[in-house]
Image 1 (spheres, rainbow, N blue to C red):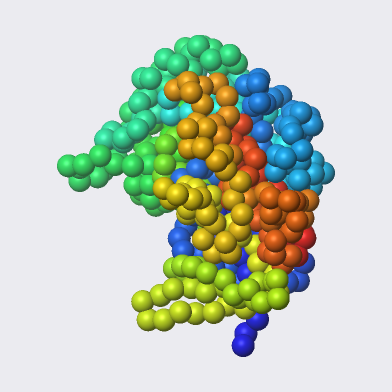
Image 2: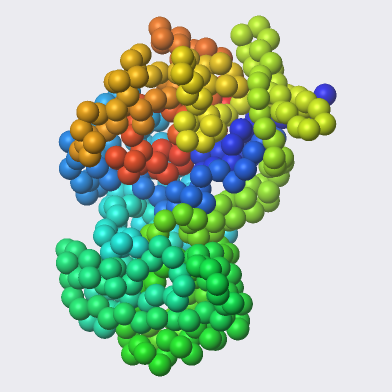
Length: 414
């Protein structure tokens, strides 16, 4: 029987950080993943805390955490550990040649594909907004046939945003695609992975933009976790480039996931993909193994400790059925309103947290799952990421911050 020190279930941001932190401690780590997780959907920027319960924006997320309830995941993790976890991620990015901008003590406001502003803390260099303040020549760059990015709308809305006011022009690039369909940001990012793509994009933009301009573009500056495309275009155009946040698939999330996967592999983490974990083996009040289902047979994976980063309701880590809400692998207690009519606010467009978004597993300060009486259920099981109860990641703009810090705290606790 081959036993790991730690098995991490889930390869989203929480799972990858948990695997990285556990491996950094010298643990033998196995990562079981059934897919890419939501990192490539939700984005590769780190929102730590954007809004408080009353809807007020946060200037300093660390200070804002002091205003949260003790039941919030940040209350369990601890502010100092949150800061340590973000610094841990930043150090990984630096060492892997994909350094990031920001800290969890200062809010950044980055433009979206609708020309609005999104609060966040940690962003790649491709989202450095400082260049906007250095020039009045601002150009929104669109790509022919690209869906879900409308440069005229971006220009119109950004011109009214505080700190972004000014005149914006629009320029269009025509990628050499055989088009009878719309294209996505991934298509263009792959085009800009090539030298031919970079040269052609540069040629077209040189005809319509002035040196010294800031070019606001969708997130298309290559698929790899590096800044080769950014450096090439900025050097040859003599312009500053600024990527926006856009709808899925997230190229920035793809870059971050690729970087983290490369990192954990270097740390000796063993990864098994397409591993559908269906149940656990419990012996004397502890988890001994988890079971995966495949077409051919079941497989049992044994470990001393288990970190659950399976993604909550939207990732399949919490299952909602007509008569119950359940956690499917360990049968852990799930905290949820008893009446379904209490799951959502009465107002359709409510400026308040949604109860259904806060459904999850209650934990202690070590990320261990608790029952309704506050007792630890399985002492060698730890919870991370969206499976946690007590926060509305969408309302607070805290999803990736909780993922990073809870994955880190769980790994530190094993």
